Length: 135
Image (cartoon, rainbow, N blue to C red; front, side):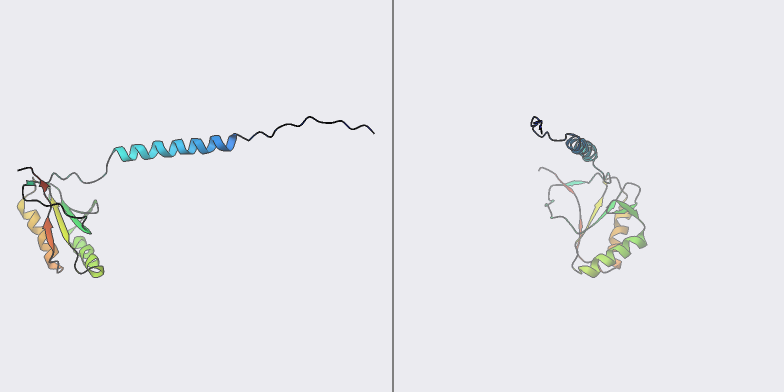
């Protein structure tokens, strides 16, 4: 019997799965780099004050835009929705600190209305957001 000896070939890795992984990584980074470049949020131009002090992130923030609409977590809410969300936040933490971020062009009555909504549900810790100005 005659046996033929076959030449040993070194195993070569399959490149197709690696190309797929690299392609998915490329798509992932392309998508998330464009999302990060355009920040989302409410465009509120805060008034400036020399006496402003930096605060830690507040657990409950109310934004008031130029038209007087209320926003909580970048979602527009009515006065009753604002009170119910604040009540649920106060149920988990009765000592919640509420910050009102009002645009510098907003009418004063809208800021007072936001303060009223906070006071109606029993909120006692309240602050107004400002940009710190150099003296």
